[in-house]
Image 1 (tube, one colour):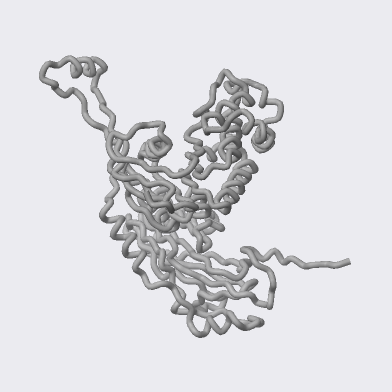
Image 2 (image 1 turned 180 degrees about the vertical axis):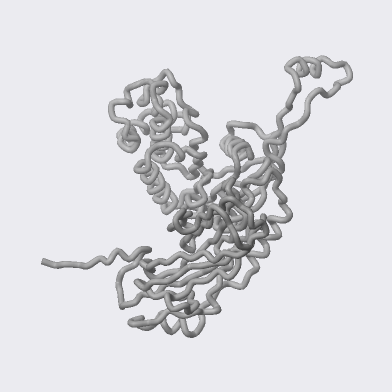
Length: 438
């Protein structure tokens, strides 16, 4: 195993024997000619990947896809049917709520139990127990039996133990989906701190934005197989596109990913490069043909087609380099095959270049129509560009009355925002801050 490798998985497979009736298990065991009464179920099938030290890797997939089975084999909870796992470093894992805890013991007693499982002696646990208690925010409940805890309280305790033992490798399996928003943010902040310290993180989540924000790579698992392993924004985008499909065409998805990765990197034109160096005062919005998205993902068209996506000024000038503080119109055309639909919903979203969603919505007063009487509709959203300097990506979509996408294009339009004044503010949103010294 390479010294820079934290986790290496090679041809990992886990199969279970499924019997039609319980008696079939006995029949198979006693049959003189070894007749088979079961069929093999592949919870995981020939999965291979390597995670370098210090990497944060996200795993995404539907329930039952094999994500938890994979993590249990990496941590040694399950034995592979085939293949091997190599791990270099101390692992701390939150596989499922309550794992490694005794429901009859108090929260405090379970801290000592769980840290001993992680290789700490009592003296070492004594040194960190107050930190665990403070992080979990359980108060007097720390002295109550675990069986009286809610799922959120169990998550607090489990995460508090997992991150305080200072692991080389932290594995988190959907534990952050419970608990209140403030505690979830606290956990993510702590994970960011652990990542910056050089630890390796393997993070399972259904949250597209969480994986894109936290991870440097993402792996999509479906029906026990690894579909793709690539940059998080592309993996989560392709996953969301195919999430509702019963059968996943792995070859087609790999071809689409390959096409996306081979796109020419976006570059800035001479005009936009000059603006970067200027004070940007009284600059007008303009269209930069070189500023095109390279992560565009087209959903299958099911009765509708989206075209002519653009941003214009209020005067109708097409632009993709916008001046902060000005008003613009985001619009696209939708052509329908079926013009007798009872209801269609038009949607939009705007995200940052790291994939984090800034805004999305379906506004009934603007974009819900009880009856489509024409085969073409133009949808418009007027907005004030209150974003700070940066690059942003628009998505367009249309849904039918069953809330299913008839058409959707993710990252269809890229826009750059430049400051209208020589502002020293950085971040995402212009809050019109004014400094006052008294």
